[in-house]
Length: 107
Image (cartoon, rainbow, N blue to C red):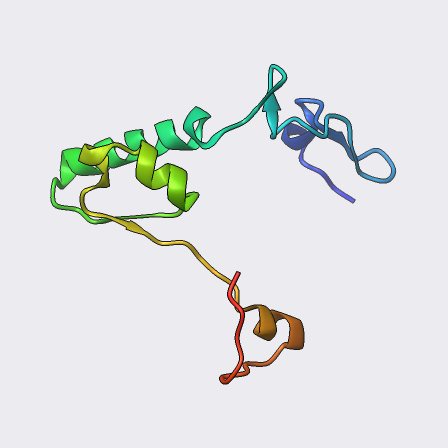
């Protein structure tokens, strides 16, 4: 098994023998506090929107983010011309591995 050294450099997991997590909360907590949408994704989306709008002020942005925090926290100026473009799964198709047009469950 070949593993990129950069992936193990931060000490989050090891690939010696059977791969295993060394710091299971590495991506869910920072300094003991749960990571929230507004901590990382929101600032990134705001910078992304500003960079695109600097080139094309009329651009329509397609973003995937948690729906409620995204709408509430992006701010009115960032929300105009933004499409919430989440992906979804049809649960019955995933489970049965075939499309059932008369019965579907989205999640």
